[in-house]
Amino acid sequence: MVLHRDGKLMSDLTGDEKVDRLPIIVSGSGTGQLLCIPKLPSRTGQAMENAIFETVLDWGIKDCIKALNFDATIKTGISSCACVLIENLLENKALYLVCRHHIHEVMLEEA
Image (cartoon, rainbow, N blue to C red):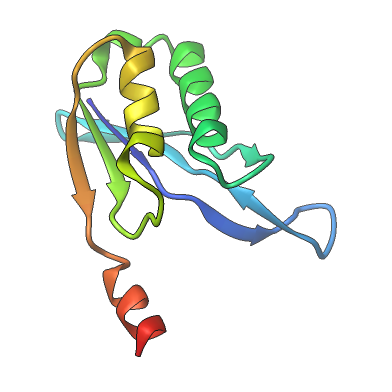
């Protein structure tokens, strides 16, 4: 299975404030499943890792995750990336699949 995640700043369901949400999806063997969309207390790798790992444990798929898909526009070092933290908690090596979908947004911001 491939674990996908991509944080989004969204309007909160209860008001006008913006909150960080983290859609967590798995795919494999021609299927996909949205697992959950938790609200994050912060945009840190640690907060993402906690939400993702809790979800993976809740769904009982810890040993099924073989690859991690993540946004290539992260601005933190790879050691603080949620993927590294998740891989450590999975206690298994995972293939990193880098998504380049948002790279144009970064290029436009810099122009």
